[in-house]
Image 1 (spheres, rainbow, N blue to C red):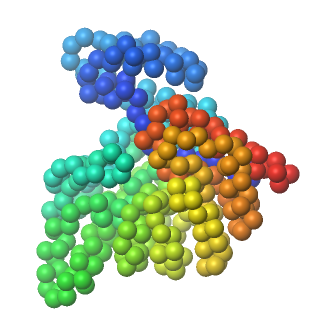
Image 2 (cartoon, rainbow, N blue to C red):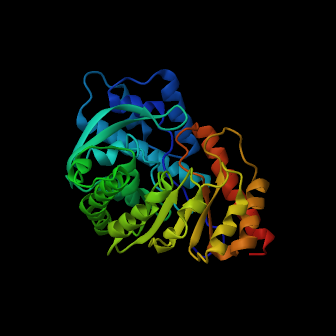
Image 3 (cartoon, rainbow, N blue to C red):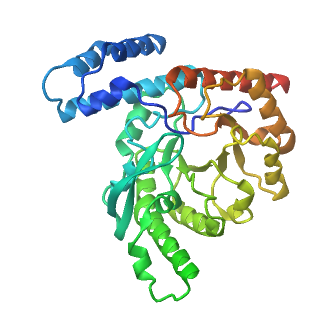
Length: 370
């Protein structure tokens, strides 16, 4: 990006009620359709008569109609992020049920057990690995092609990383493969490593290579579980590097809800050009000195928007945090982003937050005379 402090999205947006009901085959309410028209006007999206026809048609909804509704959902999210002013966009993960279940359903070896709480009042359907994992089909390809066809800004595709997929699953199969290790701690560690490495080499890497073949030039690997178990950071790094080996695209990693100090020094060996991290929710921007302390010269995606609060950060507040980090790291290395995806916030709140983030980045540039 030619200007300082470029802005980027991180992940998912909330799915509008008309999209959720449309995919489920439920007729949207008048209020849902009014919201659709409000955002269509605000985002200057034309031709929504066809979408209304799909949503309000009687009878059982066909698979083709559901796919068309998903396309509309993705288009609304792309235009939403562009209208907010972001420099790099995607589709708000409009086609994914969530970041865990979507990829796991495309990998053999898993069996779903039931829902568990993840964060806020959000739940995900947790699976156990019951056999050696094997990719059934590379995923996110159709959504990437759609985004690249319709986006007016550069595109970055987010993909859930192998360590998080393993950490959020019950590990049954790989524990059975290490039954000859007598020490329980060593046995669990080796089972986790084998599980994560298989996900990296047999599922993620083929998918990343397919995404590059489909036109991806920037891939963000999401690893929110990165620092959940500090002694397993070497597994995270080994699996990340294995998954991305030979992948001809810019690679960044997104980590949130973590003690970043716990990641060092191992994460220095992780082959990513950028670390996108949560800072606003922790309130500790002094932690950026960690990168200076360890001589980490990679780019930093600075989280300046709290995704767990409806409080709208002011542009001046965003500017202050950017300049604070720039004083330590230097301005050229800093990208600006929310802490994480904004799926728990309404579109009104998310839009206001992102607009102020973009304005704050502009104010920071002006303060430096850039």
